[in-house]
Image 1 (cartoon, helix red, strand yellow):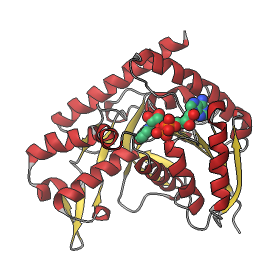
Image 2 (cartoon, protein in one colour):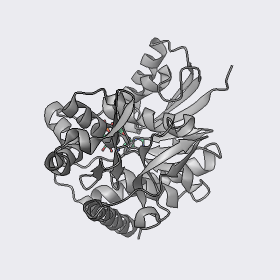
Image 3 (cartoon, helix red, strand yellow):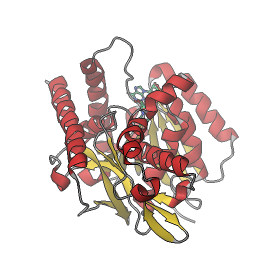
Image 4 (cartoon, helix red, strand yellow):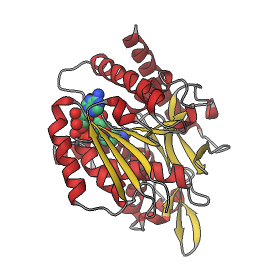
Length: 331
Ligand code: NAI
C-alpha cells in the first residue's frame, strides 16, 4: 500500500474548509488509491467548530483517511505536510479599507510562511486560496525563501472552471468537451478570461470556441463580465461566498499539479512569473500551464492580440499595486 500523503487545510472550520476536507478524504484531490492524513488548522474562536469537523470526518468512516489532526497550533499543523491548502485568512468586512485587510493577511501569511518553511516536508506544495490569493501567495513566498518558488501557487482554477461552465451552458455541450480557456492575472474582477485558444470537441474533432459560439460581442463582453463577477453573483444569491465550487477547484488544482494535466490540455494556475508573455517577473500571476511529474510549465508561444494584451496588462498592473501595498504593510 502507498504511504499516506499529509495535507494541511488552514481555515478548516470555515465554509470552504467544510466542503473541502470530505472531498480530500474521498480521494478527489490525490486519487482514489492514495491514503491521506488531514491536518486542519483554525484560530482559537473556531476551535470548537473545528473539533466538530473532526468528529464528522471520523463519523464518515472514509476508507482513505488515515489520521486527522485538528489544531490551533500552527507548528503542529505544518509538521511534515506534503500539500498545504491555505484557506484561512481575514475577510474584508463592511467599511474596511483595502489596506487594513491587506495588512491583516500579510501578517497571517508571513507567520504561516515561516511555520511551513521550518516544519513542512522539504518538497511541500502550497496552494493559497484565501484572498487576496495572488498577493498572499507572494508574501508566503517572500517569507519562506527555502521553499522553491515553483512550489508556491494560488487558486484561479475556480475562475477557469467558471469559464468552461459558461461556454458549456451557452452551447449546450458537455463541460468535459470544452478545454483550454485561460485565466490571466489576478483572482479578482480584473482577471482576463480568454477563449481565443479554447476548443470544443465535436464528433471527435476539436473546433475553436470562437467559431462555434459565433458571437464575438457576447464573448468579448458579457462572457468576460460574467466570469469576472461570478463570485459576487454567488454571494448575492447565497448570501455566502462560493464554497463547494472553490473546494472542488482546489482539488482539481492539486490533482492536476501532482498527477499531471491530460494530453493537449492546459489549466490556469497562479504561479510565479518568469517574465513570460511580458508579465513582470516576480508577480504571482495566473497563466495557462501544463503539469507533469509534479511540475508545472507555463504554456509558451500563444498568439496574443491587442485586445488580450491590454487586459493582461491591466490585471498585471493591479497585482503590481497590490504588491506595493503589501510591502507597505511590512514597513
Ligand atoms: P470563512 O470565513 O468561512 O472561513 C475562513 C476560516 O479561516 C475561518 O474559520 C477563520 O476562523 C479561519 N482563519 C482566520 N484566520 C486564520 C488564521 N490566521 N489561521 C488559520 N485559520 C484562520 O471563509 P471561506 O468562505 O471559507 O473563504 C476562505 C477564503 O477563501 C476567503 O479569503 C475567500 O475570500 C477565499 N476565496 C477564494 C477563492 C478563490 O478562487 N481563490 C474562491 C472563494 C473564496
